[in-house]
Length: 320
Ligand code: FO1
Image (cartoon, rainbow, N blue to C red):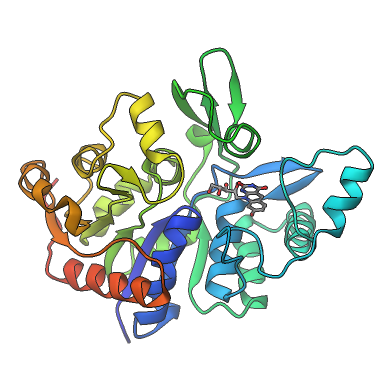
């Protein structure tokens, strides 16, 4: 049987590498993707899990290529009708996408765990890789700005990431446990490595690592942990990562990423434009691999995925 790989991922940016991994590993069924659920929220009485949705749609080949989230060729009848009635339209739910949230909410209401629901929906989409929520318990990312405290989607979508971020909280994290299947995959002797996708470390990866017991389980697995930097040449590949790092007093650079993940990484993959930072990163602990990290085409995703896996295979887990 081929080796097992486990990836930690947020939505749009991370899903690109995850697609590359699913497309190049010998058996995509041996890939487990642990998704951030800190972005989840309740809207119109529905439980919306944006990163789980984005990972599912991307791996199923039905994601909207223009936005990265939502479904390709979706229609907007529901939103148009809602606007006509004066309803809330700041969060766009396409007609086909709406079905995902309705069915997820129904299953959760019937007592299924988020893991079970995600498994069922993934099967319906014909996805071979395993997508797991980081926890079955609700964890909600909250943004603290100068004079307000906002639910994550209010900050991200409604306010377009404009408010200055002073602190980020993960409500419910202290009471949450890692989803049981996440712990089982990390304990699998066939696990070859852990990949941290190029997602925003502050709002996509930190909520996962903030679930009590998850970091310890990664350490106990004793397998190499490799991240792909979401920062290239001081800019975020996608979204507000650089802005948020600045606002929280961190450096928006590959060195800043290495510092953020200090103690966790055995390797960091950086883009050739950042090659000069290699020494500074290695002084912090992780080995560096240089490879093009900007993924525009499916080929880019596949090439980077192969480079990440190849690099991880050369590493051994650092001693904590
Ligand atoms: N992102 C937006 O910027 N605007 C939207 O209207 C929006 C709707 C949406 C609906 C379903 C879904 O699964 C994701 C959606 N996203 C939208 C993306 C989402 O907000 C993600 O949390 C962010 O992209 C961060 O990962």
